[in-house]
Length: 260
Length: 282
Ligand SMILES: Nc1ncnc2c1ncn2[C@@H]1O[C@H](COP(=O)(O)OP(=O)(O)O)[C@@H](O)[C@H]1O
Ligand SMILES: [Mg+2]
Image 1: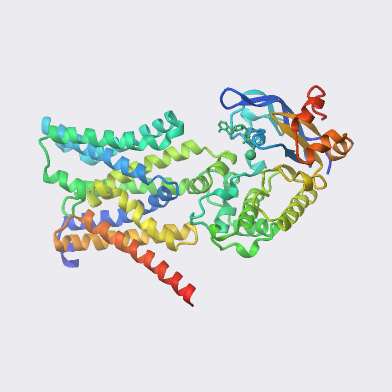
Image 2: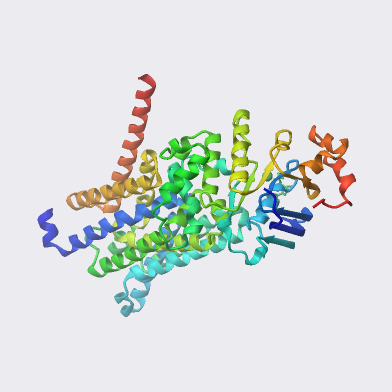
């Protein structure tokens, strides 16, 4: 699904934790219905970028708009679902059922000082159905496998029917066969519900035939465009695929800017 | 026992207070344990002690102050201690847990100074340290009831948010929940509950009543709701059993309550072990 309604717009965004810039002059525009993969080596700032978009880190320099609103005044957080990189390193001894965990995704939508709505059980079931985990509803979350937990966290993220789903390396620790099924699920959410998806991943080999857009990030964005645009690029870019250096890209595209 | 309960007002006070504390201490305890804040509860109870000691000292110097219930100064110190811990946690960003021993030792130090100035241990102080069946007054009971109602309403109101932030803080923040505010409200309720629990279990053992029933319950509970229900159940068993045995054996109830809670914990551990062995063998 292609539209020209911007959901995330980033201009000249810089970020540093301490002294060194972790992100520099980021330009990115995600439209409604896009399925964007952000790829880059470890420590390239992928999680930092997502955390800025999610308001988990405070923006320093540059512009960041969500649904056309400045992030500082943005309040529609229930329109954004998030599955964090650390989702399956939570305290596995925590006494909670799958039902309780998935339902907690409704917290913001329900509002402060209110009980969960009466139909939350049906909503939880529907969310679990879309990740194929219905029969686990009453299980303790800690007893599930890593892959199953990951699907529960996706159900938690999509239960409030967000317009954008943001995932940080969701397939780490999920076995290969499951990864394929996992991407089918994301494609279904993208195609059927028109959900905008932003995923950070290392699976550069498998991702290209799943997503509509791709961004190579290493402190700054070295390429951003559709998959077709990327495929038209020369070998130097392809060499990145097969394993190596981001700086090959840097030298070529540093001054060309992002191809939006 | 039942007869004496009808006969003696002090016993009624102690039992009603105990039953209420048996609900709210483990209720908050569930959140304290899953959020790994057990040591904060301990630190706050020691700060409460210095509040009590301060009250005893001031009453000695200035007699009219004796009319002020020490529970109030205890609560005041406890809440201020909670605020200081939160402040220190932001000062020492990378050593958040350092806030706990700082406040705890400060609380004890201050308490010791007040106690020495007041010329040492009195029976009153002993009651505050280890609980007492006979020392709970009607006013104490009323304070306990009012604070408990406030605490239960507060926890019910922020239950969803508290669950989300306890289970996965980052997820809660990504939902745009006011994480700091919720945490702050929670810590203040903990401070209040610690202060009102000390009449029954005593300052040194308050945190045990908040954590031992929970430690037993999370071994059995599948859901968070179950964890809360079992914790309250174990908390009540400990408090009621502890008060009855304390009354008959003439012991400090703090001790009997905590020993029963520890016994329940032991039973749940053995139960889990036995079942596990049974599964492996069978
Ligand atoms: N909380 C933090 N404080 C200081 N530096 C950080 C923090 N989080 C990440 N960094 C640093 O920022 C850089 C980018 O990290 P991150 O965004 O996690 O990268 P990625 O997700 O691409 O692996 C790394 O060099 C990392 O060490
Ligand atoms: Mg990362």
